[in-house]
Amino acid sequence: MTTPVLRTLTALRAATRSWHMSGETIGVVPTMGALHDGHLSLVAAAKAACDRVIVTIFVNPKQFNQSSDLDNYPRTEAEDARKLERFAVDALYVPEVDQIYPEGFATNVSVGGMTDVLCGAHRPGHFDGVATVVAKLFTQTAADKAFFGEKDFQQLMVVRRMARDLDIPVDVIGCPTIREEDGLAMSSRNLLLSDRARTKAPRLAMEMEAVVRELGQGAAFQALQSRAIAGLEAAGFTGVDYFELRSCADLRLLERPAEPARLFAAAWLAGVRLIDNIDVPVFSG
Ligand code: AMP
Image (tube, rainbow, N blue to C red; front, top):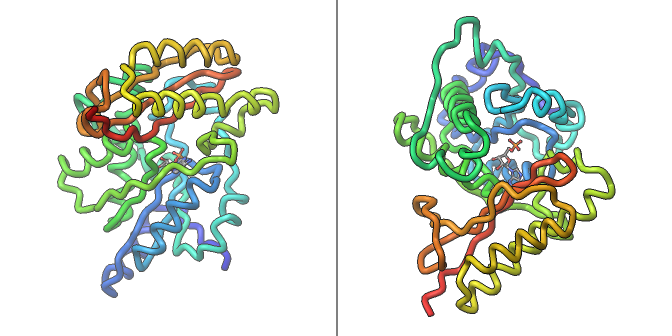
């Protein structure tokens, strides 16, 4: 089925109103396009849980720190629409910038605390941009459920907090990270890697898995962290923004996974910033 594309808020509202009037539930999958199997897993989860599914594609200028990153971000709308055909989604919402940020737009949604660390510390303003656009997409789509990837775990936490704090009646659902066969977390930014860099990229997930294994044998984190960072640099990564063990509840730094924890990493490879995070089983030994 050809994917119906909506480009205006007026057209989106007409569709969502009629669905809600018929008592149908609406799921939304917000994306920035360049769809891969990670995005499509969210679409499948939405299809399984909701009567109607809207996928959004909006490359949100407010969440980019560098204009070159915004300019280089892959845009593949026609291909994206084709990839969605087999899911028979009800709408692909692709708004122009003025449908999200009309002339004179002056509101900023900022979630405190949890945005001070990890990507928030390295990308000033990034999560304000995310929280603002997602608040807009939640109210524009009037979705009952929204599907986000654990690939961007901090983003998932920020979006949940924002929806709760603003009383937006949407159920935010986290879905597991989908990986390439070699372990690299799927990401639209992987398209920007040269063939040579692509062969090195799985090292990030490999170092993380090795650390998680040793944490499970009772090792303290600090020494493992230094070794992993050295391993990444030796493999050709040009910088590690962070490689940290943190609590799943509040993103506090941990030295041991004595409570539900995740390992978070962001590292640069050939000018591309890769991020990943993995669950760390609780170790109470
Ligand atoms: P993006 O287009 O990068 O803004 O991502 C849109 C949504 O897809 C976000 O909720 C991401 O967390 C999710 N996502 C991106 N990559 C993956 C992946 N490899 N596995 C699962 N979800 C993902």
